Length: 355
Image 1: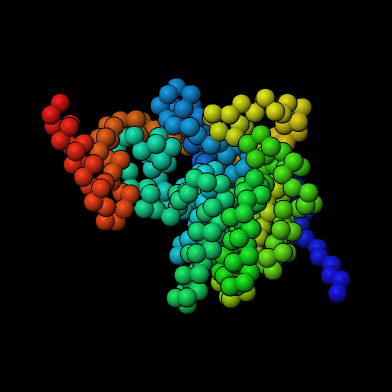
Image 2 (image 1 turned 135 degrees about the vertical axis):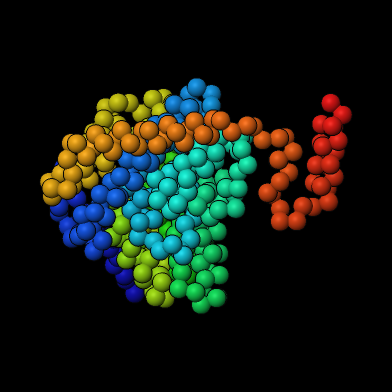
């Protein structure tokens, strides 16, 4: 029996900041939209500072989120506190929105070399390194919610490259079969490191990968934070009320390098990247706020000044922390340390004492 499928596309603000779609309920409050914009700029300022620290040898390899902030920020702003966020490694603004401190973020990207860092016990930080495998973790979290009859939702964010991995396909399949309260958000920045989207998949959209798993799929303008909030918010409430999972493809663009260990000029040129600067999320949201009369140049100057001061102070606090002792590599790995690791730790302590 033949079937026909269609993927809806959603947008609230066009690249000029003009309203072209229905606003989500929360966005009818100008104060809330201003808070969202402030969070976007805060995340972007952190991003720039982290790159500067890495370039001067004071931070580990860093993954910039420049131009992609609306995807994760629109996602987490639609979540409740009790929902679980399972991020990848580009969700800086979202982590700050969820209550992670700036110093904690610097510590995370510093490779845990300084201070006492409990971040690995927090669900707001990436819990896996292999690309896309955390989609399965999110499905597992959602299964736990279902078995416990808790009205909570797991939300995972991963990139377009991850959709070419078996992990993501398996997670979507499980979510469909078990009707899990989970939302998968694809940050489609159109590059899997140096591999463009057209070389990864023959699918017209990534959202349609939901169809084979029997879950809902929708595509959204990933540079429009209000549209992302709206689409993900609806998907979350659907999942919370036993309506099943959703795959949301947020189409954006990676304006910077993949990480600070990458040089994107090797595989793309300025002529390709330049048009996307006019579509980035901060410009359009600022224009919208200005048009509706709740944001001014003075507000912008004050925000940039205050945010830069806050970021600089957090970076100074991070840099002032003493390096962790070498034996810390044994800690915070297991709830109960295995005997072999305990023996190695004791040996390291004894060797340090003999020096």
